[in-house]
Image 1 (cartoon, rainbow, N blue to C red):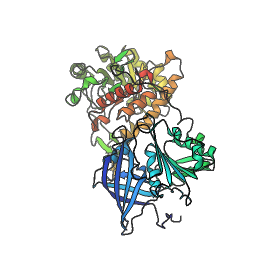
Image 2: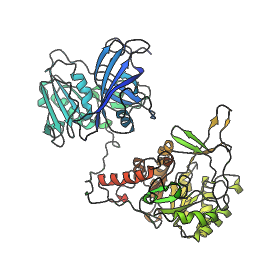
Image 3: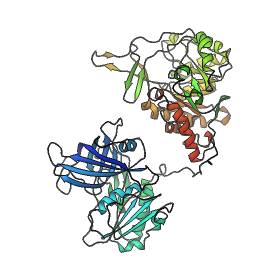
Image 4: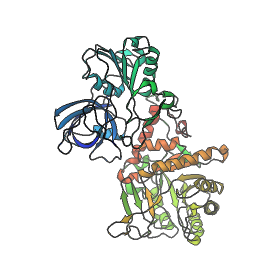
Length: 602
């Protein structure tokens, strides 16, 4: 593969570590704190000259001390060469998610990883041509960076924002027009309030960057006017160098890589009907926020049991509630699933029990517990002092121990049993009850006969036919299903060359499993929805949930409630933050109850 060089003959991209020279809030951006300036100094590699970007290019940025996998693609706002070996680059950062939140948290002197400069550049306009630059939101950055290189007063500039204005520090247009959706600055309205096909006819070329709907509108205006148009596109990226093909966009000339063939494209080849696909272009009906004095109702009823909210502590991660009572407000939770309990109790596994991975936890605890009788006499009374509803997690090694345990729990006033069928059936060669529909149904049917309490069955994600198992336990008498339990995993000690765990295999949980768990919950809720309404049972989702956004996803996938486990170890306040986040989200979106958005993704 031949080297790629910029117009100065310099080879790029390179992977370098720069130093943050400043990070500050853009004062004029609305809402306050939504846009930041990030200034970075980049030195040459191996004693060579530092490579300066050209207008239109971008970098993949990531903090040196980041815990994230990927850098974030950020367009260059301005750059200047300090010396042969040093370049100063300025970026505008729009606070959108975890990656950008990390970038704006950087301080002067912090290290930052840069891959770049990446992508192509804005075509240089012909001499004495009349140019119009159009920027929307944070998309003003690459257009302003281009305008800086043009002769002063040789171009006009249109900047469109929702509210306020920013990113216009270095431009000197003949005419500057600002539009805002709310009319707070300049003309009230979107970009179409400033330009149309008639007004752009006086230009030789239009250069634009911004939200996709805005670019589609600019493309049409220029096409109707017969004016050349260049558009800078954005897309999700992984590599940034054209290798992964994750950022391709559809064009009339076939798929083009946004990072390599773009980000600047000739507007004539872009097909926005395909770029804005039917799935990604769908929007939920706009709702007005709840009134300031109106509180959303987070309550949920599962199998006849009323919960104040849909956030439950997962079994094995919260003890019996009292262990965390001095750390967080346990009463603010919807429910607490007890540690997994067996009839006679057991000491659990020997040897290593926990191994941390970059995004999760492998555990081999082995259901250590005091036994059901001890629980009924000692731990259950403590659990029931909390407002959060008690859910007793019942495990067993044989059908008989499950049944005897259920009979004892049936005599208590515990409101619900969560039946863990991921346990090995010692009489069937050690295979877990929940791995096969017939075995799963047999234990549920037996326990169903032993208790009248609501029965929520916890399923293993390792079953080859998960939907088949779910339907089997439903037909056998389950009142609800919780999904997923931990995934099978292992770890090896590279010093000894032996497995870390005595049982070799152990349970994997944490943020890494969340997308897989979400898919399984989605699939099960979809299958439930195909049944007659009177045959459906609720699904409680769990697996890698660590923030309120995760909880919203599971509820939108159809979950009636969620359980939070491993996240509590890293952030003991995770569950209370999720409850608050759900409440704020519902108020903002105008959702009065969970039913207003439950299952909307199905």
